[in-house]
Amino acid sequence: MEFSMRTLASPPVRSAFLVALFAMACAQGDRARGTYAGVEMVPAQAKPNFTLTDLNERPYDFRASTDGHLTLLFFGYTHCPDVCPVHLANIAAVMHKLPTTDRARIRVVFVTTDPDRDSTAQLRSWLANFDTTFVGLRGNIDEVNRIETSLGLPTSVKEPVENGYGVGHAAQVLAFTADDSLRVGYPFGVRQQDWAADFPKLLAVRPSR
Amino acid sequence: MSERLVRPLGRVALAASVMLAIGCKGAASSNGARFDRGAIVVSHVVAAAPIIAGRLEDATMAVYLVIENHGAADTLVAAAAPLARSAMIHEQMDQGNMMPATGVVLPANQTVTLTVGGTHIMLEGLHRALVAGDSVPLDLTFRSAGTLRVVAPVVSYAALDEALGRNAAPVARP
Image (cartoon, rainbow over all chains, first blue to last red; front, side):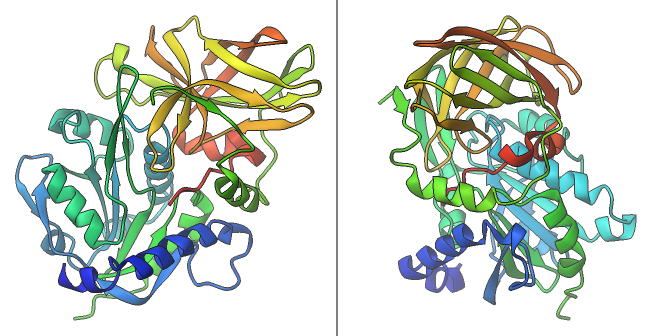
């Protein structure tokens, strides 16, 4: 986390990152300037080191378990009305059109920002609506927030609403290429055609060793 | 703090500008049905097929639509759905939190879009499992125009972008 506390998490840099995510939102109609439909991290950042609990109730070492894979990391919750399911449904729809060999090189990791309501069973059942290979992770909310902060993401905020509460969360999907670096951030609004165009580019980045 | 009035021209200027920017592209919606009452025309009504991960009564379903107001200022004050226990107007806050809203302000002669990432109608407590291909009737009550019955085709989340067409522009948030 040391790297990211110094880089992404410092307020000016984090602000720039978020502004860039905003600015990228129109990239879909104007893609000439960038390699990716998302916001490219220049330079790419190292993959963070954290361990949470997976759907088999076992420790999931993020860095070790995703080593050498194109990894999409997303923070959200199963009661999320549209941002989370739209992101995951779009990713799944495009992944399902990729050759099996390419799909095997991708890890999609979803971290719940609402561990109180998202039990392991709830998370498993919800994720299975998109793809049974998607990894669901749970952990103490303070730990999840620490991870989000280290990545330059806003922390999750629980706010009461009628009959329950909503959970604010970062809306972007972070893409780590096979060289284990954070290369692109995809804000809410990326379309399936964006993922279809970017998967081959992201997969073209090979492990660094 | 529990209730808010959605003001489309108010504090969401930044989000709106981003929305317009993204909205520059998009195929025409496949859902051309229009519903009107008085000065109000509602179109592009789409419901996202619920992801049922637990009990059906806990399932929710978001509905999106476009409201054209061809007359004096009005307000969408309530929604009701026969297939659900309740239908509420939800506004998503900057951090993605949902807040119940007391209404959606419809300025005179303007169009307001309820779309993904922003304000939507949230159906809660579904009476049956709705899947892509189903239709959901919805009664929208406007302060001046009265109550209008609209029908939303249900589409999967994967098909939502396409179904929303030019209205799919999400409201980006930091």
